[in-house]
Length: 139
Length: 222
Image (cartoon, rainbow over all chains, first blue to last red; front, side):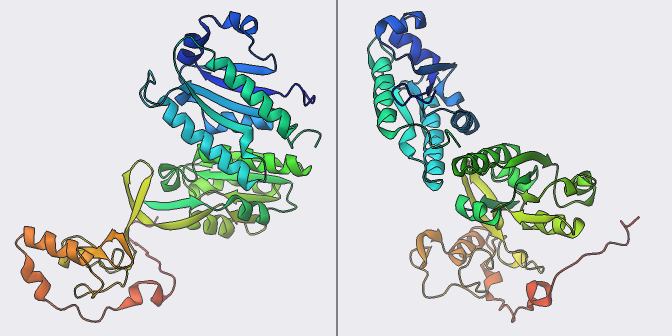
């Protein structure tokens, strides 16, 4: 997807966060979840690996984010804190490669029915639209 | 164990400039335990290098392999007939592994991905610290098991310097003065008498001052 108006964004989301916010993932489009965001559900955000984040970028994502629980409400106690450390690692790698670190983000969202889950997808979409396509595209 | 850490990414990228086919070679020994050069780190570094090259429009082919150890002939021999297939091998072992790789494969370019830092311990997850300087003539029997070479900033043998303040070293308030630790430990063991024995000038010939070291055990040789 090279259209800068439809950036290709991969979202790695904690199972608990995603379901608590949306009640049913099938409802997401009706709730306004952006179509350009590809959801990959994890049993816990702490399950995300640095390798998986980097692979998503290598394979063409314009932006990547991890959505987990607030750091004091993680079902697995420290999952979202661990995920944040891995996201920060990749931010540092991007910085060293002269790639905008803003292309990857960690979001900690309240595990209650709310629009937070959709709002971060919209926020990330807006951010990546401003940054433009991945610098790996077209190379 | 030997503790290492990955070199800055740009340093690695710089040494691999123009190379199109790389074997990234991990080691399942010490550097795997300290999360610097094991299988997982090999995969991460390969991804980083490919992303960098893709961004520059200069693709690179990366192969990934991790040997049980890179400091043993029998494991490095696994690369026989294969080493020549690559433009270079990027070793994620400690300096020992890189050296032995270069010794065994004289016509293959070999690069280090890590800085070999020290011989040390894992204090907790993500924290390592030095304990042994490999001087070749251990004095720990006289210092309560705590090393004044590896753990004293000045490598003093007969007590602390004037920079020891409240049990800490003058170089950094987070660094313990090992001579304070030695004193406290010997006092606790009721062995303070040991400190009255003056260390003579140390013979450093068993350390690097005597040139590259080698041990030959005739009882073990085949």
